[in-house]
Amino acid sequence: MALIKCNLCGQKVSSRAKLCPKCKCPTPPQKSAAKATNQETPANLVDIINSLEIAIELKELFKLMATSGLKRKVLGVPFFVSDDPRLKLWNFIGAKKSIVSLLAFFLGPVFYFAKGMWRKGVTVLVFFLLMAIGFSFLPGTLSVIAVLCSAFFLMLLSALMAKYDYYRKVILSQRFWW
Image (cartoon, rainbow, N blue to C red; front, side):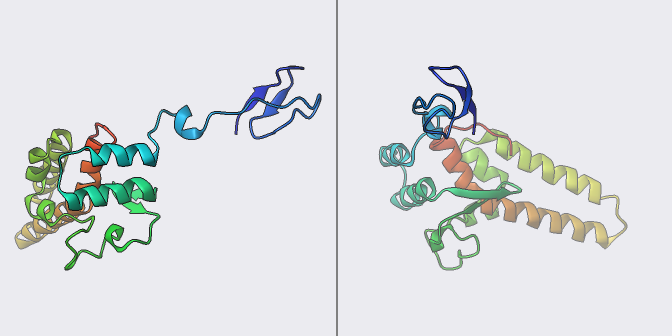
């Protein structure tokens, strides 16, 4: 909510108010949030998605992401408002059209490099190397276990974020490190 000036008397009025409380002059209509922040609307995103040369399953998943709305992100992992099972993070066993990428799980940074997301691939690789170097100072087999656990954690994060990151790159044209 912002304060705007009344056209007639100049008093500051809430942007949500329909009339000025002082002179009862109607306030000018405000631009929608999507236009004010230069964001694409879901309908425009669907048109962009339909024009892409990507797999049909990925198009359907991207359309679902565009129309569902992002609830929040935790460590870069998206949580969507939709109840659609394809957008649920742990519904990937046997689900071909899931948001989770098993290819990214097994390839990690190589997946990001192959998709043209160099920054993200470098970030994942650097995190892994830093954890591996840090845990190498632990005594004996504890260091090996710690390195394997950290590798599994990064692989899991890559699997959970990969398709959403690809959506951010291709559809939203965002450039990002994490």
